[in-house]
Length: 119
Image (cartoon, rainbow, N blue to C red; front, side):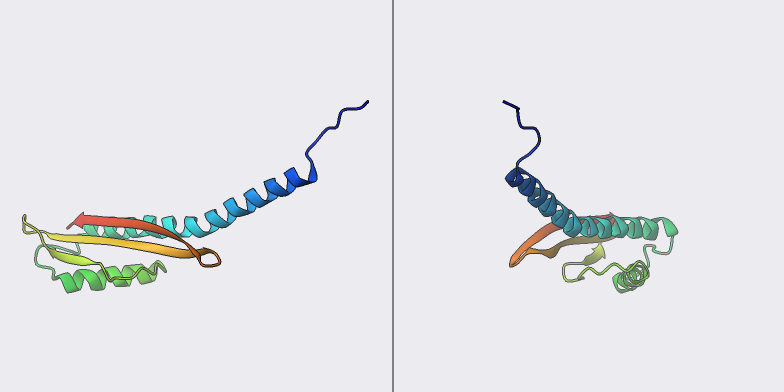
């Protein structure tokens, strides 16, 4: 009697299903993390540029941030953004935010991020 080699049809379908779920998850998560990385770079560049100093108003910092985010096509809600003078007298930007994307049907993937920087 010959031994069978290879996977059964149900095993092949299971592998395809798992690969599809992983691909869909990656397709949803990668842009979220990519936007966060771009935002981190934008904030670091703002700090290093010297464009923001102790006399810059929080509104001006937000305007610069909005302009740079628009140039990089990053869309993040500013609802939780806080820009204020810290104890050291320097401007502090604190921005906890979350990104969400539909995964399957009414199931969402939610990822929380937190940006904090002193200018």
